[in-house]
Structures are given as structure tokens and as C-alpha cells.
Image (cartoon, rainbow, N blue to C red):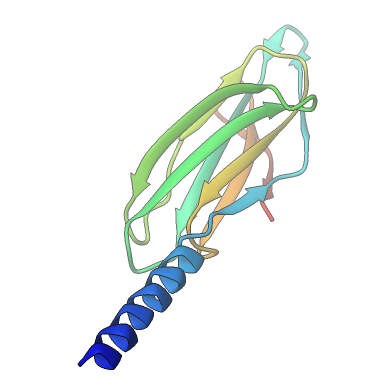
Length: 128
């Protein structure tokens, strides 16, 4: 009976370790994008995600200055197959900014998008 209890305890430890390994966070980064004022028109930058998983995913997205300063952040649950729009945005800074996404699966795609003041797409880039 004692040997069975030890075996059971050992199995619980292994299961716990496997749970910790699967809970590792995945951090994705876009390349920097230059947000600037063009002829007096401020461009707007957006960090958005697409959840390709079959489960709801908790996602944190940050707009980050090249020196590592976080300018804006948002955390939310993203439904399976859902694409966010303006998940986290930044406007008015002139400089190189990038998006950082923290998730629990590689089945989430992150994007940085630059728009003009009319909401027209200027450029977009995927996170890796």
C-alpha cells in the first residue's frame, strides 16, 4: 500500500510538471514601424490579433517604443477565430514603435498596422 501511495505521489508531481511546461508563455514581436505626422496628419498605429486556436485565448498586446518603454497595453480574452480591431492603439508619437504580444499558444497571430487619419491602411506587418 505504501509503495502505491509513493507511485501515486510521483505521478502527481509529473502531472504538475507537465502542466507547468504547457503553461509557458509565448511572446511575439513585430518589427518597428515609423509612426509620423505626414503633412500635419497624424498617423495611427494599431496592434491586433487573430486567434487560430479552438479555445479562447487570453492575449496581452503592448505598443512599445524602441527603448522598451510600453506606451499602451491591453489584455482581453479573444474568442476562437476572432480578429481584433484596434485592440491596442497609439497615435501622435513620431518615432519607431513595435507591438509585443504575450499569449499561451503559437496559434495566435499578431499584427501591427499603420493607418492614416481617415482609417485607410498604410502598412501592416506580422509578429514573429
